[in-house]
Image (cartoon, rainbow, N blue to C red; front, top):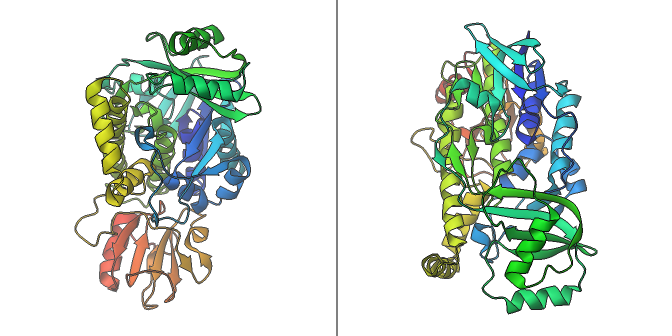
Length: 474
């Protein structure tokens, strides 16, 4: 028996496997595909996800394969620059091919000791008081203490659990791909300027030498499991612009819809859901992959604590309590962005008004922090505004804060030099540093970088150590 079986080796599953292995949890990842996905779609890591990579020592690997871009113009593609002074040492977008992200995260998990088996599809599951029995499509059975479904929007795990997935079906569909064009860039730019009534869900953007990223609305809603053809793109381009620009030699083609759904529960006994298995939404703002990776980061240390035997009684329940409301907010903001993409007069009037409002720094900052997930504040009870928020990568005596979080442990940042983590030293590190760039005397960070306590009283600290890290070892 392994400790955790993860269904799905996408970004969410691979990130979760790595987080669990930081705590010596025995992990088996089952991926139904026999080979890694070859579709070279460029996605953006937002600020919070970049911070998570820095916390685990992965950011340099990501930078090697990505390109930094300004952290602005995300909300409904309204072209406004990012406000100055965003609360992060990593205030940029990192554009990187999705297969590269998956490869790097899977590589990281394997380096830490996770097992990955490809060509293994989950067909059935049964759970009892001791664990979960997973039956594969070939009839083989595996046993684990917990199962996590990171198996995407059509999640088999979610369906087998009978968890409801309410929301709205797709009303529109969009085709996206990378391909070569047969006309000069100037001709494309002139035609796009000429056709001012083109849908907002439509662009041709240069991506490399003669290669363009092409986005066009589909003729209707179809089975997303069936990839579009080059002919589909040619027909839609001709309908909108009167020409298909001679597009040819596609690198990849895909389709996505605006279906919006949220799982009713993230946990049923010993089975949990994360990533697209728990929530789907339109790609507006580029939040999907980021939301899933952040789910994994929140769940990993909590599930590990449960398995290692030191988790407080309700710790694992905080996964749903914290992450489901975050997903609900993402669904709402993508609904709003989708409406603003309509060419109807009403939505366009609202879009123009919002564009004016975003000239106010407070409005622009609020929307950027929402899209990039640095504005999240979990409800830890009454306290200073920093309580429940993530802490930026501040300077400390040893260099940068995030460099101290690579092991996935809690951290007491103590500017008084009078506190101690005592019997929690096996799961919480202690940094006594009066020079740390903080406006508070001391704080306690959870392994996911969120501030769990602020103060300077040892007894109060001990109470919060118990709340988040269980009973002391001695």
